[in-house]
Length: 176
Length: 179
Image (cartoon, rainbow over all chains, first blue to last red):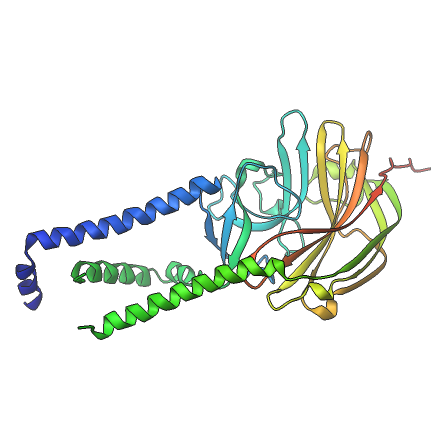
């Protein structure tokens, strides 16, 4: 009842204004993300490590900052790649690079520091090399454990909905 | 004037801004910390054979030439450890030119160095950990081969960069047919 009274007092104009600020916050976040993506030439310039195959260098929940660029990949670089048919991007180190002179096409082989074997078992059946365009980005910097929130939200979806709902309600009723 | 929620959000947002500024500061200053590592690589020989080691996925590996290197490494990387060094990733890469392929780089050995006690490397007559072969089957026409030791410091927080250390030339011979 009290809420309804507050609605009445605010009037439709104030309510619309709140809605507008909410939308502008959302769109500017989206713009920054897309701008970063354009600048780094990477479809997702910030990723969270999901597996322990690069331990002890990267742990689950670490945030990686990627820059893809247009230059050829070097051996020893840690890259994030995504095989066409598999949904999850993988963070591993490049172990072999062969660059064809005529086409500039690169044949790359990766391996996780913590794995005993190279990644040929993770590629598509029969695939021996990955190509430049399967690489989302190279790791340029990282912040430890800052992405644990994302992992929790993926493991407990109720947390995600609850948090989003709470944010929406709060943003509608804040007075500044 | 201010309720508890507003105060809490103020404190939190200030804390997050301070943390972000500190993160940037640490990331930018860490590569500037001086270090004086010593390093040397010596090659004893290269022996090329056909068919070994086998790759379980690559069916051509049985017919391909594989080079087996024998090398020494002497390095003292203790000074590369500072307060923001989680580990050093040391690796040796062989690069060469082959017909039709302008650059070929293959990592043949690596080691994760987790603390200063492990940072004095003294390897005697080591062999490559990973197979060294050409993209084609043989080393025919392969030239300008080089072996380089690289160190990749991984910080607790910050930027990734590579440091090339020591480079020596080598030749990759063809396999001698079995008698």
